[in-house]
Image (cartoon, rainbow, N blue to C red; front, side):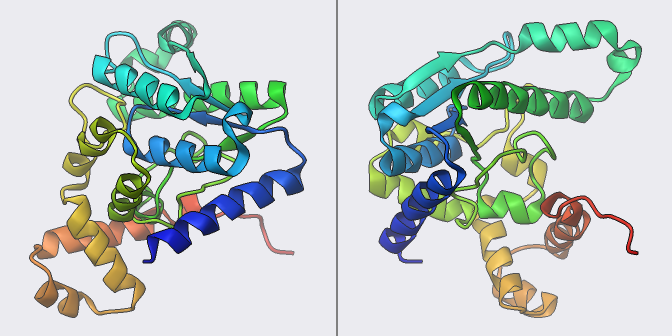
Length: 255
């Protein structure tokens, strides 16, 4: 991929879509990770720093201090308006009124946190007549590695056409602060969680698999070309199949 062409296409996309929608700017969640850093940087280039609000939404006792630090570093580097909203109280209030919440597993609770953050972003976007910018990359979208109506609940996905490895490349090209690029990717939904541990394969390898699948190469060809196990390949293919509903609008019965 030509990164300069990709960068300009994304900037034009953001500018054109916000203009068509008649909004006054953008709101974006700033996690302290590289995806939100790149999406925010490109949004600022498209709209200007005065039209972008970054919101960091940590959970007290869970979100690493370095994530909050890096979110602030990015906001200062971009020169955008920045807010921090601790979601702990919201989650606690939800748990207090839902009798079954204590027995819910960590994935169920993690999805609640993602949807809480989405609600906060939309509250601010509606209040300010702005759009919510997504931070999902192509790798995550293809694998369904996002929460439906959580981090997947956005108006635009500016970096949704970039594989994770391309996100890193373009971020380096744009000079995004290094701590955000080098840290291990994590959704931060529970203690010790990392993306690659969840996926059971590195982003470098999974991107190679996805590109070959995109070119309609057979599983046998992919296994012969890449140093991955059959289990890893099957896991990737199952994730794509099982997450199809996340990439589509809700189905309706045919007439």
